[in-house]
Image (tube, rainbow, N blue to C red; front, side, top):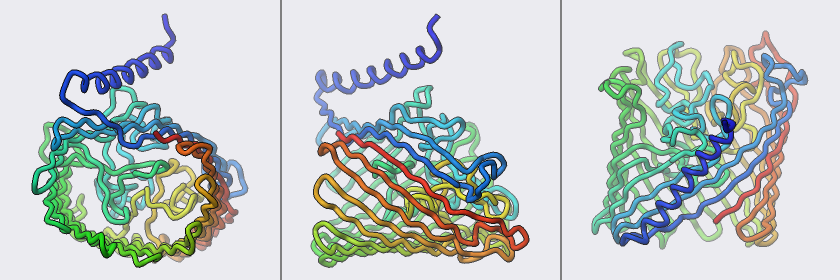
Length: 472
């Protein structure tokens, strides 16, 4: 009898071969065209020391202060052109490295929604709110359709029809808007997550103006129930002027979940502008309405991100990111005020990217959180950095970040998150084969000491990540 691991490996290889045979041979017998958008293979290793900010190796309930792990992902993006106007686009990940329960990569545990375990996510007055609400790790990630094994994940699959007036899309499609603080498709190779919704979408093109309508379902617990669905009704307007390098957009979302009294309105506006060597971008999100679970609760969330970039020379550019995410208000137990940026919108390697600290009961932040599930919430932040590209094969980055909480998360608590410095270097062995190394040093602020009575002792955290990326 063959070992179980060997049988599983054979199943994976058989499925992938069948997939390739289908998509490669089908166009030969039909008037179809198969093409591949840029795909890649990524291997990444991460090591972090003193993640719980304690010099005690057994701190944070045995979690420990050191963590070492790796991830591996093969991402493929096939498209099938049926006619000049009709296409099917897909994206899947193969051999994603899974975690024991959740995953270092989104959805690697079959059927799990990628949610943040932070207690200041969708919780109001001590009662948990639906995970689909903004305030969880992302709020809009989808569970993943698989083949029965969590290491082969179909991320997107949708039909696209291009008419004389606009574009119709039906299926599980990637979502991205503005700077990516709310909807972020995760198009960068190192992104750990990607937002997508099961939607019917139509975009009307009127020259420089595009108008869109979408209907999406982002949760379905019981297929026979009409009350457990989370529905999104959305519309947007987008204006693009290439001659002036100007983009402006407004997105409105109405979220409804009848069984939990959820009726929320999201207002998302953004703009980008380039003037010679200077680029600027701004995105603001506000949420109002009833967040659910208990009738009478209210929501008042706010997120704001700004980006500035200046190109000094062809090889050196500097950037500045300033932003704000509203904080939970411990004095207003019936109002949802915490806003969480999308997990792909990072400002530093450790800060707002990895779980840090050992005082989860006081702050909701802990080294026991899963990797890459933290997010920017409850903070004024500043991110300053510079990129240096020596030539087409060698480059480096220097990055500094700091943040303050708008309100203390516990009575009498401090608001200073701390300071972080990251250094990154990369080298391209070939045009499509790149190695990159990032090291980070985080000096925690008094925020991580918890309540004045606890006044926990903290120590700096440091770590690094090395990756190899092959694009094709």
